[in-house]
Figure 1 (cartoon, one colour):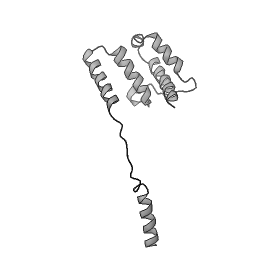
Figure 2 (figure 1 turned 120 degrees about the vertical axis):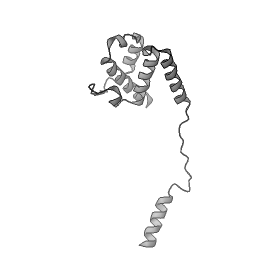
Figure 3 (figure 1 turned 180 degrees about the vertical axis):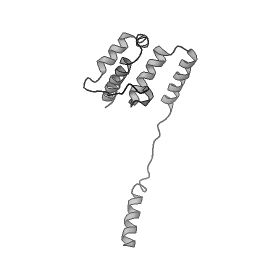
Figure 4 (figure 1 turned 90 degrees about the horizontal axis):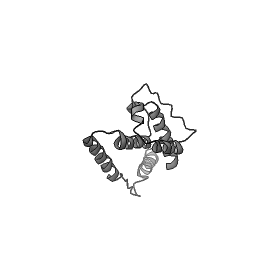
Length: 122
């Protein structure tokens, strides 16, 4: 499943890079672009309307992560911005995922109550 997510994300990123200024694309090592091409899903079509800004596109989370990596690694010229974004990424990585714990007695509580009300009230 993750392989599919990354292959589609690579396809989305390559699509974005096709509409990015060439001066910026040239800052990315060709080896990384070749890596994206190698893992991209050749059957997947992103269908982005590039008339809209990038934040209006329906990018996958993995594509956003790859673009963030590209920005922090090769496009961010300001060291303060780079540190800010790296700290933000680091804090998001360390942020625990919300885990929902269900009480086995409460899982079907609503169904049982509705069924009891229906039987009781007719």
